[in-house]
Picture 1 (cartoon, one colour):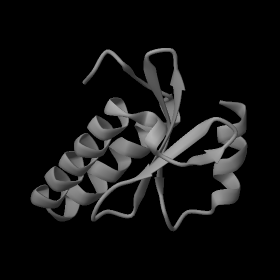
Picture 2 (tube, rainbow, N blue to C red):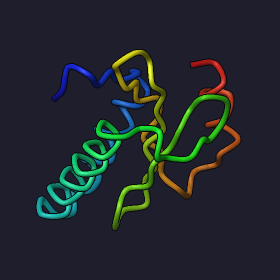
Picture 3 (cartoon, rainbow, N blue to C red):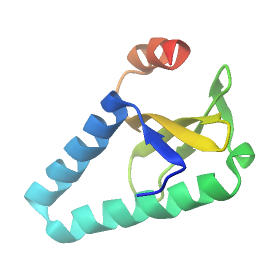
Picture 4 (tube, rainbow, N blue to C red):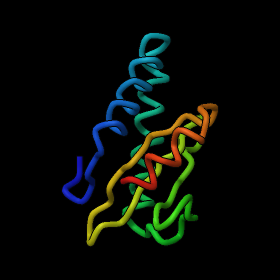
Length: 101
């Protein structure tokens, strides 16, 4: 992927699960999800400060055309992906994870 991107295991699992879910229905849709993620990640890498805070110093960016949010934190010159969160999931379970990251 990119040397500046570090995945937390839970976030990578969420991302892989989302791709698998879409791929089971349509390879085309799964490819579009990956493309939307890569496009948003590129924007995050270019200027992470443009995205709003979610909690503490963690930020988030919504994917375009998909119901997912990318929650991340800057750590030096790296972007740590903390969650690949479906918008319909209960945010109460996300908040402790972001606090403890």
